Amino acid sequence: MREGKFLEINKKTTNFFLEKGKGVGKKRFTQESGAYENMLSNDEGKVNDRINENKIELTVEQETVVQEVMAAAQEVVDQFIERPVVLQREQIAIVRSGALKEMFSEVGTEKDAEKIAGHTFEHLQKVAVEADKDTPNIELALILFHELMHLGSFYRIRLTQKKEHEALGHYRPERSGLSVLDSNGDAKFFRYLDEALTEKLARLYIETQKNNPLYKKNFSLREDKFSDAAPGTYVGYEEHDGRSVPVLKGAYHNELLATEDLVMRLYRKNNNRFASEEELWNVFLEAKFTGKLLNLARLIEKTEGKDTFRLIGEQSNISQEERDK
Ligand SMILES: [Zn+2]
Image 1 (tube, rainbow, N blue to C red):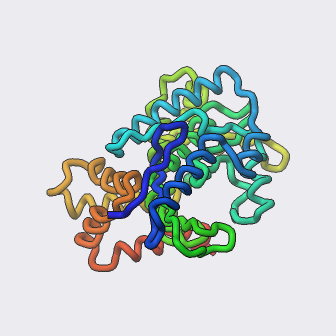
Image 2 (image 1 turned 60 degrees about the horizontal axis):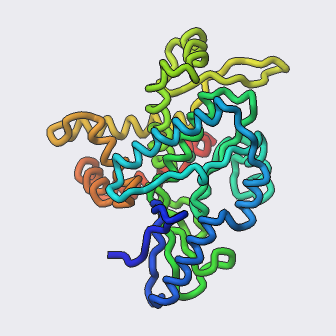
């Protein structure tokens, strides 16, 4: 058993496990975890300041979107985590369009800074989504739901005895959802599999909202322009040669297709064990939300052969775009 605690924000528990590393004394752990919880509860630090500076005033309709999405995301979290994990409104920041893109291009850590429209700062237990008054409700909903699935996922940092890292010091990030992290906090294994699961959940939610007046316009637009659109996608506009052109939007499309293939293959070979494909998806999702990889690893290795779990982990850390190069 790992020693440590799930950190609290404003006395409500999160899915962020701070582990007491080997050789770390009880007293030091109590102090450090207390200080971390204070930082989270009081919204402190440079990154938080930057996010807060860029917050926008939401329209009444946008705030309704946020509240509805939050409630639905909470239901998903409750379905997979036995402990009560509470998603809080304070953990959500809607920032002006461009704010995240600027933040990430400055530090240069995100390769695709120009494409970022939402981000989960796991170590701050906060999500930020870009929007302005013209952002379609459905876009705000889909991106926010996606980020809240990251926020609800298992996250683990280990407090170490010795300083292991220049910037992170005694804190060593280890897991984020299915992703296994390296000492910088970057994903080493399973990144895109985790993203595919995250996007899948967001799209499933969106598809249940067909009759919600908040999104109705966009759904009828989709039916009009893209009658064979994949579930959960929506219509947005992009500039092409000075003209605004409708395009179908949704993130991690190829990763999602690859994951659907994998799940279908596993289901076909195990349909005596699983009543439905959904049950098999749930093995993946349980691993993402609880952090326990063993059931998923066993299932994959038994079906696909020894060492395949690690292999899938390695492969799913490379995006389709990088593969195409
Ligand atoms: Zn994501």
